[in-house]
Length: 248
Image (cartoon, one colour):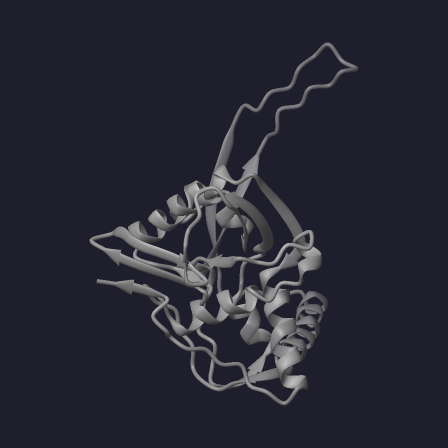
């Protein structure tokens, strides 16, 4: 049985046209059970049923296919690797013409697995349920090294396949990008989420970025467009666990 909390609140009013002030004098709340014996409003019930049907039609549309069942995990996983690698393909029109050096994605930015076989709009909404936006971060190598230290501390997360991290006892032992050590003086172009750029999920060092640029693209829409493009070419989406993050 579901319960709805009804809260009755007297709001403080300040009327500039009056010398009298009104203030809240009380507040109370109570639980009122909603059961099958309640009499629903027929017009409202019909309206809800209509939109529920329409939503099911939209969410049930098949937009692509997956070659495998993808789940999240640490230090890396099929799903975190898949998302991170797709993000690496962000067009340079969003980066000021700069090539993307690497991407970062948090594990819990995925809320459900990607099924094997048909993928529907609803599946994409289930996996990428947050309104996370893709952002472009410009960050010095010295601070990027601190970001990788954060990866070591949390035991791994999503990162593009051109990065190799070696972790031992939650300490970063080695970090390479495209086979090269991190250049402390170089400014790297990183595609990540606004949520992580704000320093969440152990990524505090990202707040030291030289700049953070909005793309106006949600991760969900970006991933959906990728899946549709693969289907248009007759291809299934796929991923692999390749040792990009190693725990010794």
